[in-house]
Length: 439
Image 1 (cartoon, rainbow, N blue to C red):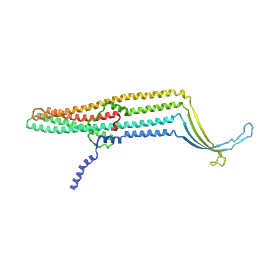
Image 2 (cartoon, one colour; image 1 turned 90 degrees about the horizontal axis):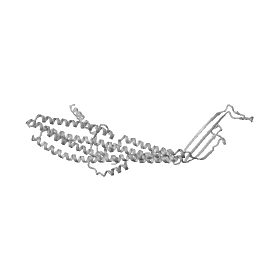
Image 3 (cartoon, rainbow, N blue to C red; image 1 turned 30 degrees about the vertical axis):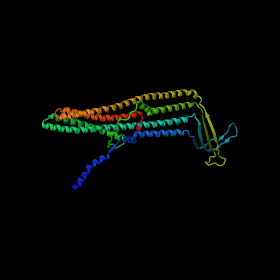
Image 4 (tube, one colour; image 1 turned 120 degrees about the vertical axis):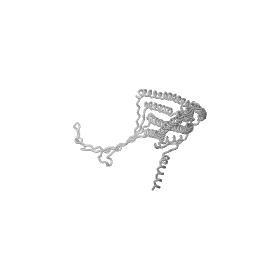
């Protein structure tokens, strides 16, 4: 019985570890972006809008097809006064009741309508392209949101690594201080200072862990993973990327930014709409074929020569020439709207240029920060070694020793954060060119 209890206890102790392993997922930055795109609800909505636009295009295409309709009618009449006499002539005797069956069938085709159907199809096709561009833009937004959150988690994890190193170091310093205190080399106050420093760093570690849990949860939601998944990230490639002149990124943005391409399409739509409005002044031509079935015999299936079946072919040419003077203001209004689109694109182009330049300068600044911080770490390391030696030889105070270690610890954290900021700044620059989802 005791043996079985030990086995059960062992399984209970192992189970949390197994459960943790099941809820842990290791992801590179590229894998996270791919997963975010696959599971994004916003992109699923974008695809639904594309499907809706394609469906609308098919509806417009159907308008070019001929129309056809048929009807069949039964009519019964009661005639109480069935004798008719006019002007003293012989009366006409009518039946007291009558039944009739009437059927019609018609096929109509618009041969020429001034091109309005063709313009409607072209306009709808262009709006379908707008839906595709919106989907591309949303894809970029999703990619950047994942990258941003991934880098935030990376920054926290790097900070925790440095904090762990600092806690290990301060623990060693605390032991040394306690040994010095026992030997009478330092005072109790020196030991308390190291203990206070250890407590402060532990508090920083608690805050970092809390931030890690928050960011990890946000990333789970973005990637469509179970909300209790612990994400293990790999260090993204934060090396210095080959940087091109700022004009190259501006040209790339002016060619690829979805907002600018949408305005180009809207300009084409406005041009098509203008042609459609001008088409109101043109005549229309239609043809039709009609067939009639008239059966006044009262029988559903009439006898020979008791029904008629006339058929007609016709063409209809019409022209609303009043539109020659009533359509002018509509044309002017359409031209004004089209001009507004051109102005809007000019404004947006200027905004894109300033955005690109700002992101470009931020990336260069991030690279410069890394160089400066690398130098400061070298200096802080030398300073820390010097103060450690002086403190060991009882030349420097505990405060000087703690300050030197804190400076080195903070420099290391700043460098890791700067590397992550540089990587994120690079992707921010790519996003502003409209090319982030293609990287």
